[in-house]
Length: 81
Image 1 (cartoon, rainbow, N blue to C red):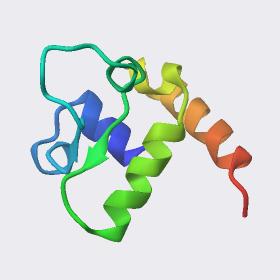
Image 2 (image 1 turned 60 degrees about the vertical axis):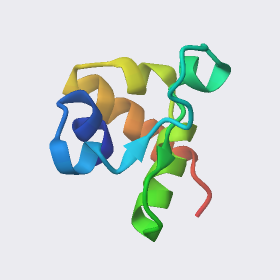
Image 3 (image 1 turned 90 degrees about the vertical axis):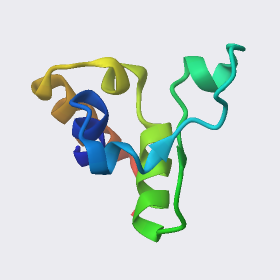
């Protein structure tokens, strides 16, 4: 949820930790699927990037907190523990 908030509301510190791999004018599948990559080597950031990349398109594109929470719960229930 914190990463969603950082991406949706443009939080300066958290939003800068995540970046797309390509910054050119071509449109690739990674751009259309909203795949991100980490800018640093911290373990927390790498785990958040994996969670973001495995989340649904509706989670990534919504601007409503209720929908984001529902999608996050669904993703959390599908994770192997």
